[in-house]
Length: 587
Image 1 (cartoon, rainbow, N blue to C red):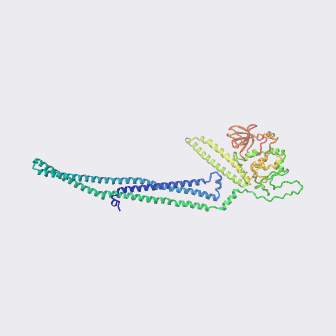
Image 2 (image 1 turned 45 degrees about the vertical axis):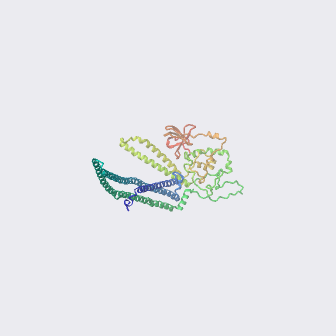
Image 3 (image 1 turned 180 degrees about the horizontal axis):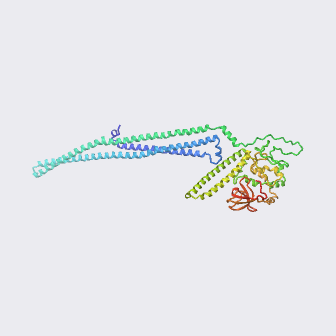
């Protein structure tokens, strides 16, 4: 079946049909474009969804992802991110393999169609011109024949008329002959034009038009094949990502199967285990005895009775109810004489201890003494590991700069060796500070693990009453927040037990004798003391030392009678006076 033979007279309809075919192709291109936009939008929404539920760095959520169930959820989020990536691949492949390819093909198709129909119109115009020439030759032949007949009739009429001269008759005869000759010439021309037209017409309808229509038919069939191939590609693009999407779903299934409820339960124990023993039985207190009742060792109150021996650190009271019940002061404690409170105030350093045990500018104790022993050990170990990593990083930088300096020394043209000295000095100072921090945290860690004896406080002024009743309060603000029998206490402000209510003794407290100087120091660097208990110093400034570093990295200094505070030990060079009074002070 050929359009050239079957549709030789349907030029206009073929023109409309081929235009419709191009419109269909463009409609399909638009469809694929919208599909790619949907895929991109879907992928974007999936990525945003995955990102929305990803754990935030350095947040509590990140710690929760140590459980197998939350790790499985995190794996699901990651796989959904990969799943979204496959939809992006679908969009990209459809854009490049279908949309882009068909767009170029449509442009070529329009040019080809325009060329074919231009040739068809040209052939039609040629046959129409030949037809017009034939019509003109025919009309001319008809006119000449009629003129020849009229000339012949006029000659016969003149020849029959006896009144007409011979000259007129001869003239009429010559005119008739001329007209007959013109008619013969027109006849010959008409016959030649007719033969030519018939030949052109045959070629037009049996050669030129069939060839042109055949090309148009082939063009249209190629368009149909092309749109079919594009539809196959449309399906193949989806089919190509199905295995990868299947892998994503398999990984989600695998993550779900990896959930271990027993392991998660164990992690809960490790996360919240306090390390305390459950409280034992409470001893019976016999109130029928006439003697004065004393507070039992297993009582929840922190007795301040006179004559009570100093409690031991590290022990555990069998009857301790601390983890669940807060202690209340006994009436005896609430009505304690003001002189005892004065002695307590004079033998304590609450601000100093709390300053040392709290992070500068932080909300919790630096030594994590607000946590149960087991949790505190984990936190301290984590802090030591972090500090060791920081030390290794600083040492790597120092080694790299040292190598660079050696290269500069050997090859001065590459750089100035002195230019790295300042940075090397800074790195050395940083390493030294970090090592001091490590030593400090390792000391606390050793105390928790029982490798070292618990640090005890030796106050400068000590009364028997204070030693008996407030040892736990001092320790709570110092390195370890523990109760006198070694148990952990959750009291957030035992420091308040050491504070004296506003009384007439306040003025006398303000006049407390300042600590004696035990040496001098020189500020190596400028320090901005912005936190409570610190003091600002300028580089090169000379100051008095009133309390040396006790292992926590801070030295207490004095500028004058009114200005004193703590500065980092690494920021000053200390010159101690070995004979100075008060050279040994408590921390």
